[in-house]
Amino acid sequence: MILGLLKEHGTETRVAMLPEIVKNLVDLKVSVMVEQSAGEKAFAPDSAYSEAGASIVSRNEIFDKAEVLLQIQPPGEAELNRIRDTQVWISAFNPLWEKELVKSFLSKKTTTFSLDSIPRTTRAQAMDILSSMATVAGYKAVLEAALRLPTFFPMFMTAAGTIKPANVLILGAGVAGLQAVATARRLGAQVYVFDVRSAVKEEVKSLGGKFVEVEGAKEDAAAGGYAVEQTEEYKRKQQEAIDSQAVKSDVIIGTAQIPGRPAPRLVSRETVEKMKKGAVIIDLAASSGGNCELTQNDTTIVHQGVTIIGQSNYPALTPLDASRMFGKNVLNFMKLIISQDGNLHLNFEDDIVRGTCITHQGEVYNERVKSVIEL
Ligand code: NAD
Image (tube, rainbow, N blue to C red; front, side, top):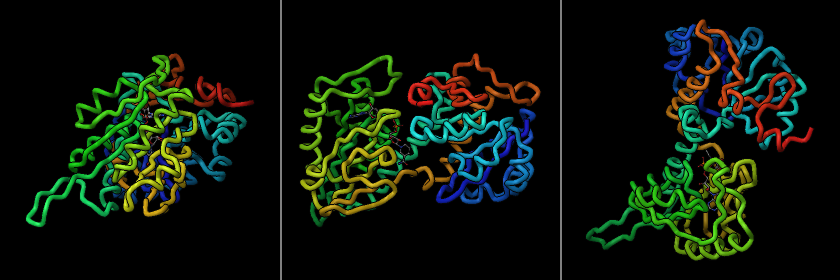
């Protein structure tokens, strides 16, 4: 198999594989082509890729010769026009939202894998890029909040008096939320957490957070560890509980999401207007509409003294470790599609290969994508 590692565009600083991962693929008898300066922004020079056994080539050569094309970000128009139906495209292209892109792949008959669709099963954990990137985001979001806040995070007892610890409210205790709890606790804040899944209560407590319970949440074991849409009655009760916690908070980190749906609106404009001046809201759910009514994707605004940050790519602000984690996940996934002699081998009997495959030979393979796409 010839794998082509493409350079990312725009503000993306990560690379889908660091040289250390390329070496593993070369050991698996895969020929790896790396686009010139693909790893530059993640501090991985071309020379390190060469030492790992890759050849450094132009983007054109990759599109001409590679069987498998790997890039974190979805393809742009130019790339879409170049991909051939015999090539396999691997990236994270959010197929539940990017329906037009899925349709383009279908009409081109491209085989595509979207790594954000890896099933959330035990066997797939080592391939779960969403968890890896959410870990980075949860950590970085808290650091950003701490830097922006006009007060300290920890309690300080000094000769100049006692400083109270910051109150941090975390909405959603999935991967990003739990990492945010851990990071905020390490920095000495008091941490309060809301989630609709009672299963996370113990995890929140074990990290030192306080779980704020709102009775009557709808849960569904069949949702595979994800939340489900709540009743209007529950939403009203939750809104009241969040509102009374928010006005006491210095920081809110929004991480609540239901995959494939707009992010739940948990912090209203009125709530923001009642918050402390100088408070900071970091809305990790910005790209799917935000947990806060005022969030603007990839924009920072200040509303009546409250800073609301809608940064949608925190992993790009931690490019080296984010690339390290991403690459390790990709390698683990690729092992499922590489035969013993280093060739491409697509075994659709494997639930992870099948679940991650979005399109193949003009058909939608992923069941959830199939249910949302209108053909
Ligand atoms: P996850 O699915 O593991 O966690 C989301 C949590 O939200 C779940 O625990 C769920 O139960 C909870 N939730 C859902 N609805 C809720 C509601 N109404 N009230 C309270 N809790 C609710 O997701 P994750 O991997 O932790 O990612 C969280 C968010 O962060 C996603 O929106 C994701 O896209 C985003 N993200 C952002 C960045 C970034 O850089 N901004 C990076 C990675 C992930």
